[in-house]
Image 1 (cartoon, one colour):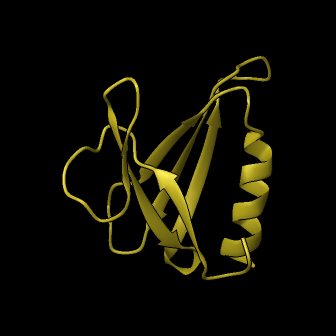
Image 2: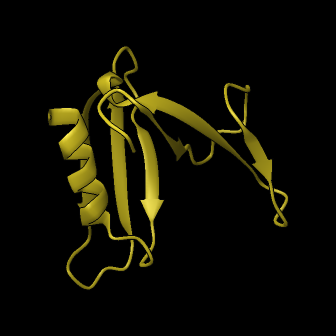
Amino acid sequence: MSGPGHPHSLPRPGHHGGHTGGTEQGITGKKTEYHSVPYRSITHFAVETAGTFDLDAELKIWISGTPTPIEKTFTKGVDIYEVQAILTQFVAG
């Protein structure tokens, strides 16, 4: 990530229609569509965890002009607090 306003791709779970970015289809046969979002378009975001021992966390990102947030679930392999710190740096900075 090289600075404010640069795009960052996040998968959009459950979204299988249209084609605005790269689409991948793996061994499972499920497609995942990725959208590139400039940091300057993010109006706000939220991180939700069920508690300190919860392995999963959810990130919601609201984009300017879009009422429904992009949602992404992270598993134990990702430090959601690091993701939150990066977003805070580029969105609020």
